Image (cartoon, rainbow, N blue to C red; front, side, top):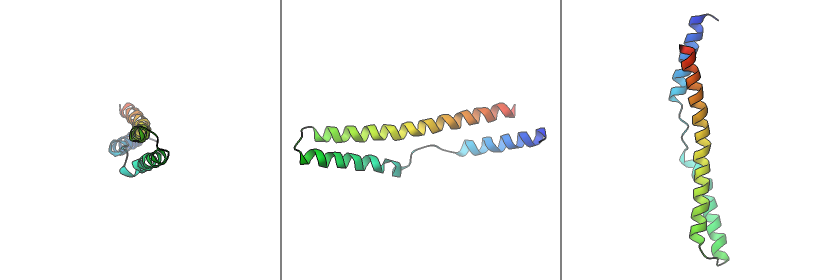
Length: 89
């Protein structure tokens, strides 16, 4: 490969990665909602106290896990972008 082809490849890769977004979509939170509902139903059937708090806590933990999984993806994208910037120089 010639230097110009490498530069073109790096530029194309950089443009592609610049447009990729690693944001969670609404459907990724559906399991979190289902988990919260299931926990609430189970809790209410057993007449436990603090059912709402337990349901909300499980939803929030699931929500944070979804966001964290995308944070890892964003870190990988940022690393790839910085590598492509290094190649461009």
